[in-house]
Length: 138
Image (cartoon, rainbow, N blue to C red; front, side):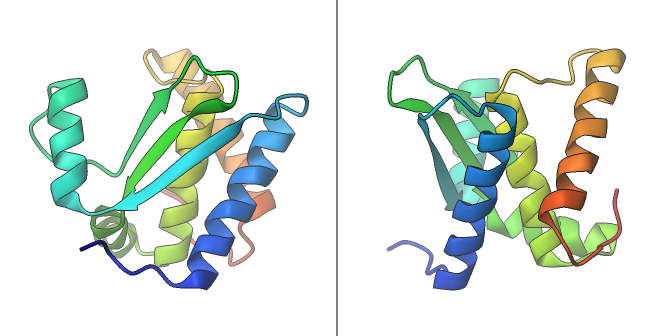
């Protein structure tokens, strides 16, 4: 049995994903799958694909497919914990992780300090455009 996700949350996730990918890759008409899950599932994926034996907030998988850019997997349990830890709303943390995943699918990463700075600056710009609550950043 899956986790029930409110329709409004699904609409927000879809809208933000479409807007960000349109901004970053305006000519790319491929889709992105977004999977909202729990810590158990993301832990298993993190262990299998990254060899890290613990849950994480977001994973991104790039696909070489003519119809699909890739897939973003987000743990809603971790999102909730991190929102409390960082002192901002659940929705802020969810959108933050969603944008982070889209950036990875578009080729951004944080493997070295310069790349990380570039990615985080762009993520902050995108958060300001796509999140109106003005939650505290990290």
